[in-house]
Length: 109
Image 1 (cartoon, one colour):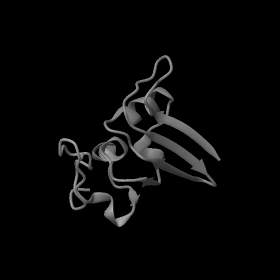
Image 2 (cartoon, rainbow, N blue to C red):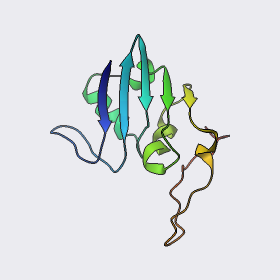
Image 3 (spheres, one colour):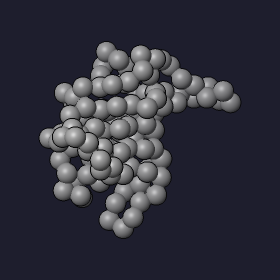
Image 4 (tube, rainbow, N blue to C red):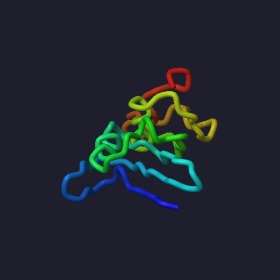
């Protein structure tokens, strides 16, 4: 198994960072994108590594429905998505009622 960190809160030289998470997991001939982070940073960092996400990813797995783990879904298409059925419910911060859920709805994905 090989795990490549595509997006994290800190980055090494030549890579981008953002609040969020995205891992590329290669195992037994399959390539899984685990979370997508907030933007297209995961695609840009993969490109820096010589990886074409759209070509190599077999499926996308979302850990949960927060924006910093799944809003990058808008930058990848035609992939099998594995997620809990409630990943698309509306989520809000208690202190100010701001949105912390996914930008796209289930039907948009």
